[in-house]
Length: 333
Length: 305
Image 1 (cartoon, chains in turn cyan, green):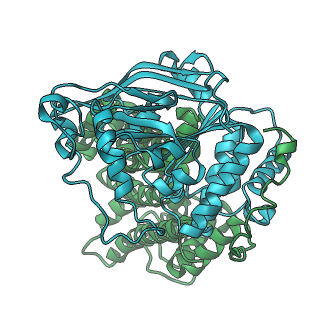
Image 2: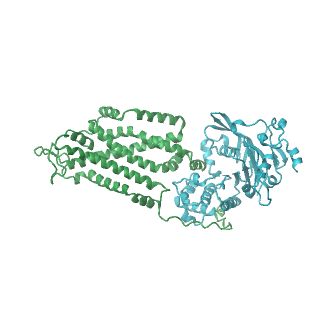
């Protein structure tokens, strides 16, 4: 489904997000650049605190007051970072939509699910009458696979199961046929069987509408399932970016290798899972040079502690932010 | 999304887990009503309030004697079949006076509660939602209102503005809005960071829409309880001012100035007249509080069915 020739829907360049805190400025996202093509699914993988959410909030223009975003976020040819609040509101939920992780928390407990889906439509198009809006809502609920939507439309979030609530979130997300759907850990709160169904809904909706999906997750299995390309983030940086198959078969960054090693696999009986030693550094205590260097088995302090690596091309579609990747590659292969 | 896309595209999806049957088929207002009706004290409170409201606001038709009908020759009488609660020293039927006075006290209580709730909710919601310097300014102003002794302000304000019911309502509301403003602000501060508010931003909702459609409905319970508390405290405060002589002036009567007049009878055979308006205030305030309690439970969407 990947269409590399088409001009990207979303083009992020050198995005840097800084929070002003009592203990000084904290950089959550640092010089992040990536593109998303129409209809493509880009998985963003990273631990908590790696800057995934800060990056998406910056794209949506929803950073808290004490945060600033620099760089460039081009969406459909428009610079989102320069838009006024009013202009951004016209984009949010209309051209760019978000599906949150915890649907129970993200749905208003005092509003029917139908009311909330309808609001996602009517915020951007007030011309529809109540009846038309209701029909549209029922259609949307049907589209995301909610059985007997006509009975469900007047129910409240707490009356639905977790999977159903997540489907409602997706219905709200796709209500205006967005060009980009940001799915922020859409399956993390769900049972494995329900996860598969929800991912399936996202894929099917995407197939019909050519919506690009930015799938934020820490679950490599989810990425393997539906993403076209993957971006691995750590300490607010992009460490590696590549097509899904390449990343799983030939990871080019030691951090990615570590992540994959920590993943249980059904086809290999490992004595024990390999863990990455240490912990991600605190945002206020980032190491010099490569952010992963203190935990990296391949780190050479003279090099990795000094050089702050920019993404290097492994091949035309694959980049890694590791200055030693050629040397490591020759060792591990 | 195109129309063709609106066709079901999940038909080949794996069969979804059998979804539980819709938990109910009753419209929401029925459920709220049923839950309220199950709350015994609230129902009793509502019945008492209704009875009080009908007899007080319908006093012109219901009261056994007209307002302020004096019978100086009759003078003070003990309760009898003609005058159930007796008469005061001017020969006025005390039951009738109680009902006419209740009309004023109830009206003031309700008006003050509504006015201060509207103002307080608006101010509190703005302070909590906007935050920053607006919050600082608004909360310092409410602090100012809270440290000023209400009785002193009432006395001065009513002395200079004249003690008409309208000015009493305005002054009491001006003093009363700070309570709900603080409560609403605190609630909004916690709600503001909830994910569904963020979700509302994400669908492109404007701030006024978020406040009106997403914040305020989640405050229904808090507001309902506060209205009831405000009615109660307004009735008490009006009674206090009238008792002290700043409030409703004779010949117009309220429960407060009835208390005030009856206070002079302590030690006489008519001291019981003190209990009549006092009990009326007590019963009203209790009933209003019970109703508020029931409303809060009834509006909780996650409450028991």
